[in-house]
Amino acid sequence: MKGAARGKGSDRGNGELRRVHMQRGFLQYAEGSVLIEIGNTRILCAASIEERVPLWLRDEKRGWVTAEYSLLPRATHKRNVREASKGQIGGRTSEIQRFIGRALRAVVDFEALGERTIWLDCDVLQADGGTRTAAVTGAFVALAEACYYLLQKKKISRFPIKDYVAAISAGMVDGEALLDLAYEEDSAAQVDINIVMTGSGRLIEIQGTAEKEPFSRDEMNNLLDLAAMGIESLITAQREALGEIALQIDSRRQKGNSAGENIKKKKLVLATFNEGKVKELQIMLSSLPLEVVSLRSYSFLAPIEETGATFEENAILKAEAYAQATGEMVLADDSGLEVDFLDGKPGVYSARFAGEEATDEENNALLLQMMEKAAPAERKARFVCAVALAAPGERTYVFEGTCGGSIVTAPRGEGGFGYDPLFLSLEEGRTFAEMDLESKGRVSHRGRALQKVKEFLGKNKY
Image (cartoon, rainbow, N blue to C red; front, top):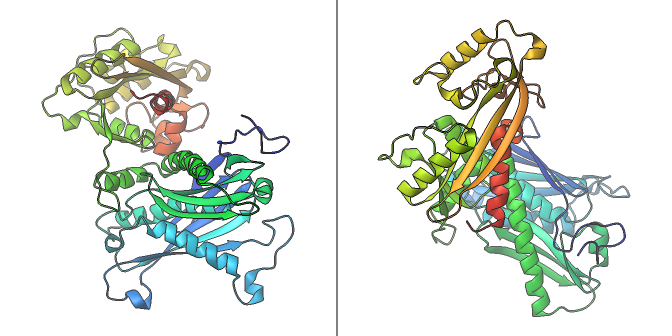
């Protein structure tokens, strides 16, 4: 149902979120930061690490996480007086700060964090409803980034975040249950609740108020069900914003949640021994509730000869063979570079263009040699990827993705693998080797094919 109780001009269904966008690493100096936008609500969340704890925690060998919240003067329709000018923070601000802090502390292993404090500063740049819940969702991303900073600097030995956390509002408006209330909907709501949940579906906090009329247990359950769906979508957005950091959280979740329960995740085997490809695929698929492993977990398996005439044939060949051998769901891809000047070569022979045991450098050198006389207009190329998803006794599905670009005259960039230093993305204006994995994943042939896989797995119990 579109816009039923949401007011004139709304095209959102009652159970739909507003547009969600998270820009991680927004600030240069903070150890973690994100600009989160949910609809017209915009909040800047920053995580700062302080190498000390409150006095009451001193010598306890555990850390602390706390939050501060503020509403900028023109975050609303009329200017608000800064609370600093008043000499004290208001009751609402104090309550929201405690709300954010409680939500985040629920999933932190303070012993793993060590004797330090992480401050989460949540500054509302623009308010259009749901600022406290958006602050929780964004602050979690900033917190995870700060913890990853500590891990990379070897200041901690294990990642201290045990699960995801997100929050959302819901309410009854004109007798209908709505998710993610904008300001006008919140102002008109008969019932307004804020819900905080973990990635494993456990409740952290429920704030519910009957603004006009008392509400029933059935209505409450309906609102909780809506919130659970919304939070699942928010956590997917968090995973995508966090990229490789999400793998750290997923690893902790596999070892057990805050109650010590094991989280059972379906296994997905990536049909590759290529570590560069494994890392890319794990990050791209990190938003799915899957235990993603590679063929390196199966020492008895040998590489399968790719005898297909097309990318699709090779992907299916590998996926079905490895699914049969492992008894697991398998994702196999075959991808390669097609260059117009070379009549589509190297194509399915991309990995062995310079010979069966050729290195990436040897393949790149041969490609540049063969294109020495190619004019700029003749250097057009595309990456093509076919991804096959197979499981024993199930139908095999194939998903395709392409990415257009051109071949540069000399390698550029330090990242990636294969032909990445030579392939200039048409959309980005950079070679794949000059991009970080998140940027590459958004525009690459493999990223586009995997997005189709993610959508398929999200809708189907395969």
